[in-house]
Image 1 (tube, rainbow over the protein chains, first blue to last red):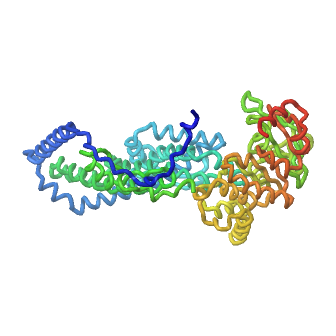
Image 2 (cartoon, each protein chain N blue to C red):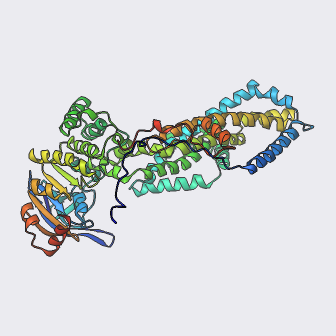
Image 3 (tube, rainbow over the protein chains, first blue to last red):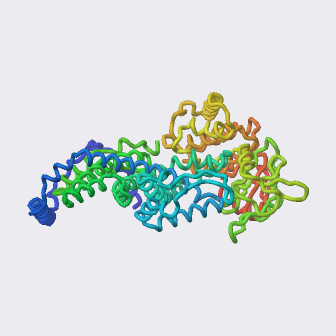
Length: 329
Length: 250
């Protein structure tokens, strides 16, 4: 009776030999083909309509696309994006650390900042900085009630570019603070305890142990924010900053080619966000090492897989797991 | 070295420590055993002020933990003082808690460099010596996820020793290890005890407690049920609760 269950299979002559790979007819997906045809038809119609629109002058698009005036706007757009993101990230990290501080004053200041800057539209904030001189002709530091101090005209301190940078950067800091805070919280508490047990101070623990590990969680949404910021800089039009959209708009008020110039701006925005998107994929892959068993595919791998799975069952891509340090060695 | 008098600690309404009295002499090894939830880990964490005690007195090397006594008043210590006290006490955790973004060597020199302000050359030389002592001289540049559990725990011990502590606290150092890796870690601890390190060890390794421990404490429900030499407690437990516990684990 008991003999039946517990005898290991004796290694015979077949041991170690692999049976032939399964060959079966894959499931057909006719509806994928139907939907593809419908989508293509709609897309073709949209393109045809735009291409043959009676009053749309495509030549105007191609002429303006590479004009130095527009290219100069791109430079300003990139400058605005970078500066606003630097302010956003530095201030955001500071706010996140303050928010998690045991000091109630710090925590409150941070909370109020985030509440205010997240609660008002960024367009209004840029508008506010731009028009500040209307109510405050001079800005300065000094001791109230005395003449002691330092003062400067608001207009010489805040030009349109600074107004837009402040508006975008200070607003971004509120969002970055929440992203950084999520990253900090995601680091296992044992890390903080181990560092504290070694006698490390709160700030040292944050700077040397917690923040470096939080980066894995912080980086992907930060890439997202950067892409978003690139487009949000177009709001600087309200402060007449000569960036891409402002310049396109200025051209169109002279030549009345509104849609054409909007297309010019869109082409450039799309081009720049596409570059950032590809960059983001690779940064994410880099920071996912050691934390994920399988890395997210590169855009190229995705594209290939898309083509491949269109009519065939899902395939695993090229073996990416070889890049991972094995966890249990 | 460690002296506890009527130490109480609650988390919310849950009373975890209900009056702990004990004394650890310099160069002694005290092992604390007991079922999970008995408060042994909490007590250990109170010793280096990772947890604050609610009442009673707890002192290390004659100085109160977390407070300063002047006249008949207690003054809470500022953060910088607490950090300084902690840096003199080494702690080893059940889950190792090595810093995953640093190599073994970087893990070990981090605190000597940044807390003590030691020179890099001196700190690295000591780190290499310590890695050699725990049998991992060839793992200097390995990251924690490239090490087995037993190797990680030995790096963690080296990291704690790098601060040249006067007292070492072990919180179930072998509980998260595969059985065949436990021996290496216990060997390192045995060596430490022989060299005269004062140690408080929360453990389930009765063999280690019997062989290395100078005293043994059995805790349950936040109180010390029985204490004595390891041989007495393990071989001739007097309390029913101790007998019941030992009959299950031995």
